[in-house]
Length: 156
Image 1 (cartoon, helix red, strand yellow):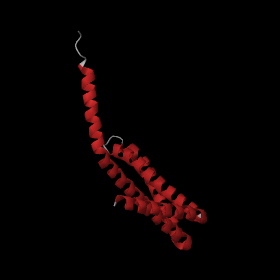
Image 2 (cartoon, rainbow, N blue to C red):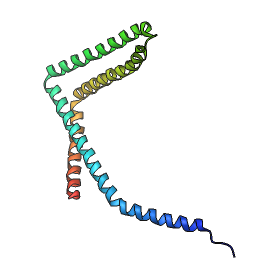
Image 3 (cartoon, one colour):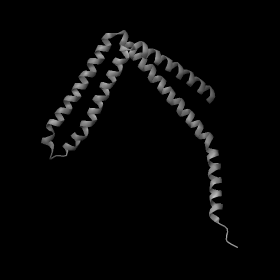
Image 4 (cartoon, helix red, strand yellow):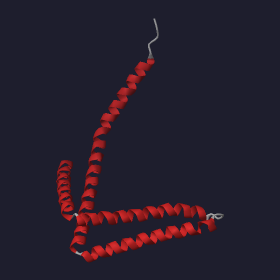
């Protein structure tokens, strides 16, 4: 007679232990995912409400919109000027350790400037198409509020 193949028995035993462990952990993981989802929906809801309030204020008060545009443009041009200045002085710092610092700062500043200008573009587009923005945003806010309320009731 041949000896039994112990690998099969070991695999079955390990599978049973892992299966039991997964089944025991599943409710805990499910609760954590539900809390995380609820938290994520709550954060999205707060962000949408803040966006709606900000764009509504810009639409109702053109002066605040103009101040925001001017502020972001000044910051954008300041960032671009800083980048040009860093590039201009970089040959003089090529032999020092500051050259690497400048080369690392340039993309960082460029990303910040780009993000600010994209935010400006988004807000101006939302003000221009306010009725469409408001309808979509308020619908999404209502949907999220209903979802958050039902999830909180289920969690209790």
